[in-house]
Image 1 (cartoon, helix red, strand yellow):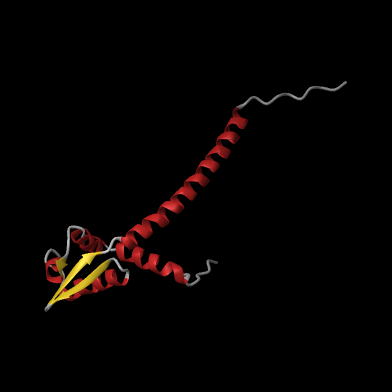
Image 2 (cartoon, one colour; image 1 turned 45 degrees about the vertical axis):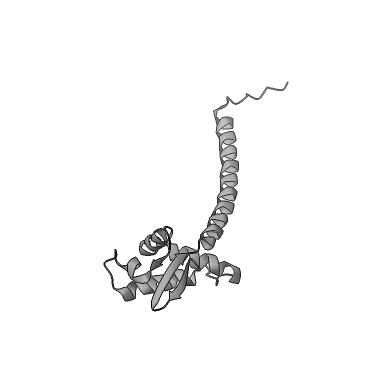
Length: 128
C-alpha cells in the first residue's frame, strides 16, 4: 500500500511552480510574458475562453510567483518572474544528475554480468 504524506513546507514553492506550468494555457501565458509586460485583456485575446477563466489561470501563476502584477490606473499589467522556473530547473538538474549516475552504475553492473555469462566457463580440474 502506498502511503501519501503531505509535502514538506520547503517543497511547496516547487510544487506550486510545477503545478502552474503543467497547464498548456498557463505555459502559453508565460511564453507571451517572456516577450515583455502585457495587460490581462491582451493576454486573454488569443484564447477561446472567458476573461474570468484567464484570470483564474493568472492567479495560479501569481500564487506560484511566476507572474507579477502592476496596476496603472485601471489597467493590470503582468510581467514574468523567471526565478521560480530557475529554481525548478535546478531541482530537476540535481535529480537528473543523481538518476543518471545511478543508471550508469546499474548499466556497469549489467554489462559485467552479461560479460560473465558470455565468457566460457572454466572446467573444474579433476583432483587425483
